[in-house]
Length: 133
Image 1 (cartoon, rainbow, N blue to C red):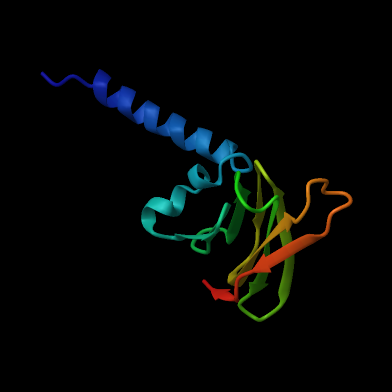
Image 2 (image 1 turned 90 degrees about the horizontal axis):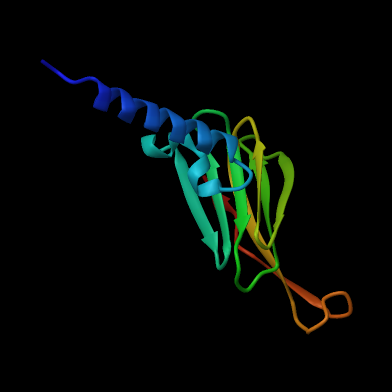
């Protein structure tokens, strides 16, 4: 006789993790995409800035700025027709997700302060070249 209680528990646990991942999109970009297992999500990094692009299901772009060189991360998104779709920003320790129709390319930028007091100090922004996704 087969035991189904272990199978049901594993299925319930997997569903619980999937629902948790979907409800925490803005807090944890690395765990947010359910299509990452299907190879649909592409990952990019600029120092402490992480960006994920999912063009397979919904056209999502996630950005997360961890602790490191840059105090603010941003990603400039262009669609497949060459239209600028705007900029997403995430301050250090924060994440942001936005849904687009189709992402054609991105450009990742990081801003850092050059002095001890950010409101009075000059800042510097580094950007990648355009990345076609």
